Image (cartoon, rainbow, N blue to C red; front, top):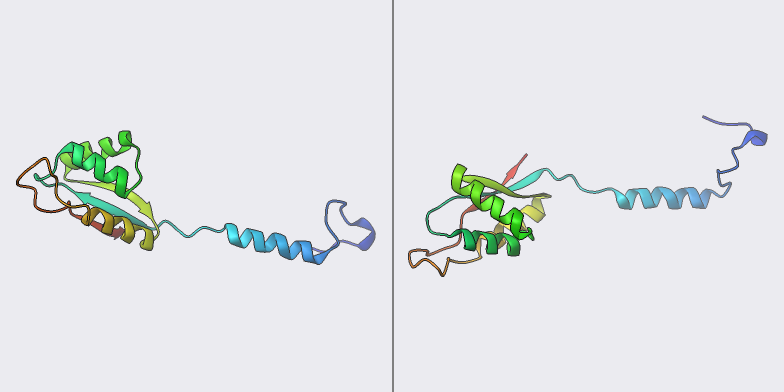
Length: 119
């Protein structure tokens, strides 16, 4: 919509450079869609302490949230531990799968299993 010259609102800058700067700032604030998740699967080779430690390290979860995930994975067999872009989720999944065995259990031979899934 155009306005006549003499009825310009006072808060509009006549400088077109400042308009393009604000458009550029808006573009840099756009965030990628968080269309991916990391799902952690249960097994009998890891303790709650391991799961909490691993999730605080790999997913940057608070201990309380990591414990909730540990309970959920134990009771339901799976839990979502991270949402993000595909690249971020792949990074978190790789950290989980590289975390190593649970030193508290002699039968623990590897990391827990996790996978990246689209929403």
